[in-house]
Length: 199
View: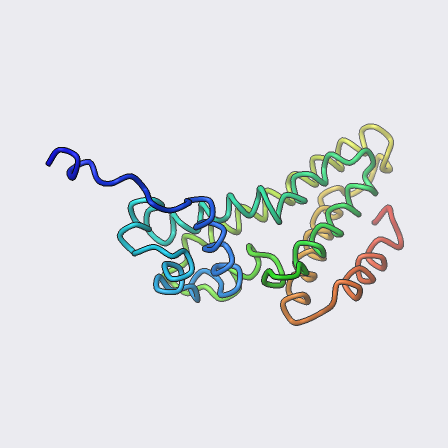
């Protein structure tokens, strides 16, 4: 009896289940991803989902962490590039690559999940707003470092540059979701960086 109270050990691969949930949220957005879609894709019951991951919102937050470590890792990795121009290139190229991978939904999970959110998903939309703002803040901080080191003009508008790049990346995601090819989006990146440094 004591064993049954503690419950049986988990009989599924939590990481694999999260990866499957990631694809569902990425393809359908936060509100479009129903619990039925999620549990069927994950191959588990709702009870198991709640026990392992919490409610739908908690599951999404765990999925977002997986995305940050996987397809979305370019956001954090780009700021490690040695020059401001290479940071910008890595950030935008990363957005193109993440949004045009074979076998995965097109576009960015964070952008797609937030595009169609009603009242029930406001807390998730707020999380995604903060998540995207953090990316912009990381870029702004890196470009300020570049300006301080002479890699950008001392009077460079680092806030505008960071906002410009995140706006282009969001646009890349929307275009990718609409069917734009990787080659076409790489051309957009080339044009976006023609007049570097910006401003």
